[in-house]
Length: 303
Length: 263
Image (tube, rainbow over all chains, first blue to last red; front, side, top):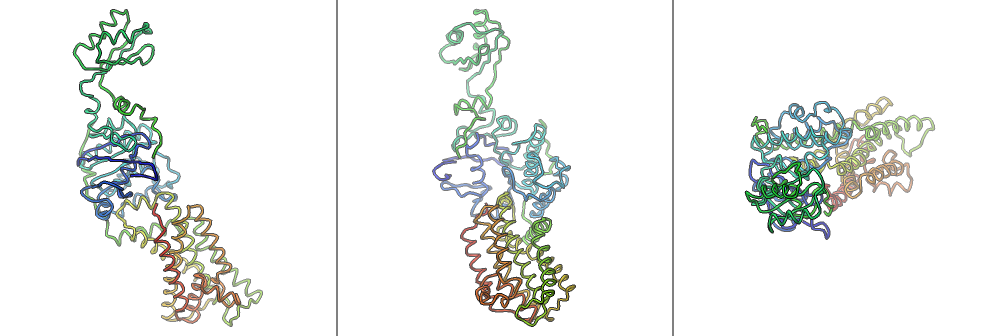
């Protein structure tokens, strides 16, 4: 997909398993929304094919639309319409809608049911958007940044709801730039950056990082000079030692039963008292850092 | 984390029958239109003021419109034509402009409602609002002594005028809403409305404009005004003016089809 001379999404191949939660993770401008909107039939791919529930989102739009639920990134309602009025309207367009009152209750929209859309808070608009995506009892929902702008409690509620959807057999595809969200929710994570897929897998597969171990060492007083080099020498050539600040280091390298012991012995030999020594799996943030060399939250707009 | 299958969300997808969708869309749009203060001003308040003011002032100064018919019999159909124009053109353009801006059309584009259904809903909503306008303006006209031509011919001729006028103005309104930004649509739709109100031969008959009347009757406003007046004064369809409206409708829908963007 290109806009003018900017390529937003290029050669992306991903598939989604039925009844799962799939997260498309990437920084702002990575091409997440473009990918979703191509699946929803808003955009025609310039190359390649898209099949959603076995249907072509453009040619088979009529058959596809009733079966999917779409949560857009913001807006999507008349400014003067009341929250519940809007939800009821979308419900009326469907054959077997959910009970709107209990859905609104679930999403905490009960109190603002008579509030005009333009006066809803950002979080309330988000939750209404999610309710509109679900009310038609779709087989597959696309949710674009479902918890952006929500408070922590709203985020928890939304996560619980998305898990319940999966348990009930609904397939969920969500975009997010929150690593935590992808790690918490998704069965499959696809990390995209600059329109290209850079990694895919379950959160566990992505963070396990094969035979790589990560050791974090925090000490009580600043490291002596040359500490990084001497620790590296003690561990061997295959490891990488990064000085995070004057009192903490990260060691990544080949996992080995002796690694932790070696670090501990090095502390003893160098008269360094560890405050904490943890062997941890990588977070998705580490994965993203390794893959892109950039921070997820600092992604630049280049759509 | 617990994951309980409650069955609440068990998929059962499907669109409602298309007629139900169209009716829901029409009622929603009509409701929003009648609830919006500015839209209501345009749809009902201004036409009623024009009617009362026109008849009162016109009778006081013994206004000569070049016909021997009672002033109220000429002005009431003219004001009805004005009301049809304001709803089908100005209100529709403004509403649609902001629907594009607020992503409403995009949102509905992901619902089971097809685009033809959305269009049908819009036309039906216009019909609902026009029905309200007809009752209020017709009622006020009656109080002022309006006596329309009786009979089936009048009803048929009026219906044809509304249908052709709505098609012409709605297609032009959608054209404006489709090419301009929401604020520009608001400005343009109101400006065009005011210009046509003043010089479009919609409220006043062509005969009141002298030589310019020959030009004004080719305007959609003049044609609609004449068609509604002929319906209520003579009880027959004004075929020539209906033809002019259909030409405008053809022009408007061609332009709209070529330029309109749903987002």
